[in-house]
Length: 69
Image: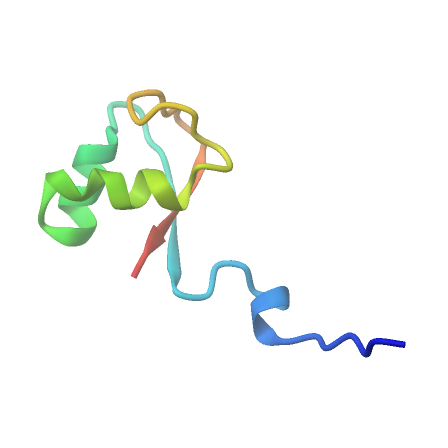
């Protein structure tokens, strides 16, 4: 028998991330500029959201994205 441990990571999947709701006109580059001061860091956001994004230039208003802190 293997014991199952429940840690904070299982209860809070956004630990270490901010949650951002995409607005009309947003791009990953503009979100990266807002959070990091560098639009070229859009890849960081894209990689953190591969579960909901297929392409970095296809985001839609209302999507919730994790922004690594």
